[in-house]
Length: 72
Length: 114
Image (cartoon, rainbow over all chains, first blue to last red; front, side, top):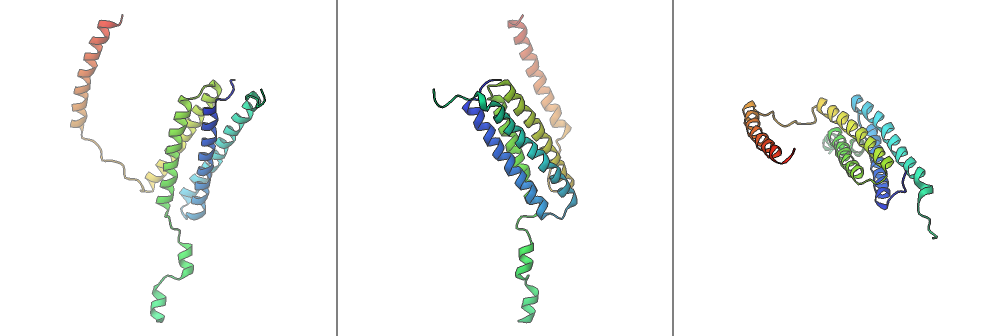
């Protein structure tokens, strides 16, 4: 495992923003639709987006100790 | 006066009607899934750490699967117009053209590559 590059960290946090938005969109759909098919699909999607978010969080946590220290 | 009030939707009725209907709101979700898949692709190709790359690859795969499911849902609901099917004559034309391309490139390969 190698220390995260600046670029990698940016992609990770951008992806987390994306996943967060996708969760909220699914919740909005679930809240507004009367269509049971749509509701069901979105409910499974919420869980998956939450898992994605946690996986990205784990990547940051795993690399945290490898980061360059501020005081050199 | 009374009549008019009956025909207009009351304030309360308006509030219960979502501004975005199902097809629009699901389409907007689908569009963001597609955008997220593109961003995961960029992240994969620009990762340095092999473990980070692998994680992005897995997230991309999962994201594409979800996009496919949402597309199928929209298609089943009749919310998506697929583009018209192509005529077999048009396919035949392209097959002929690209068989010629293949042949020419093959000759080039044979000439320069052992």
